Amino acid sequence: MVKKRHVHRRHTVQAEIRNFQLAKATSALTLKIYSRGRRVGELQVGRGSLFWWGAHKQNGKRLRWGQLAELLNELAYGKR
Image (cartoon, rainbow, N blue to C red):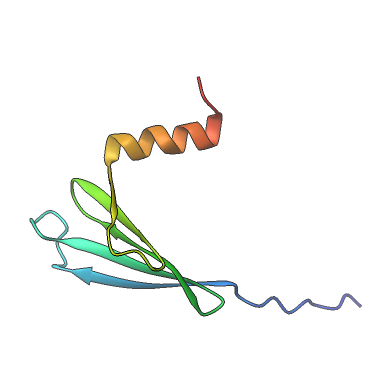
């Protein structure tokens, strides 16, 4: 008989939606990301861009959707 492994969760994410219709201005989805109970950062997704705040950072880093697409393509497929 195969014994099942118990896997502990390493990451947790808390979601908060401000202004439920994301099509409106000042609307955003905020994701608070934790690893083993410690805050990793906060990701705020809006209509025109997204912001990333590291664990103990006061200033966020803004990425427009085109910039994010380029960054993710580089990570997935390498530089061209």
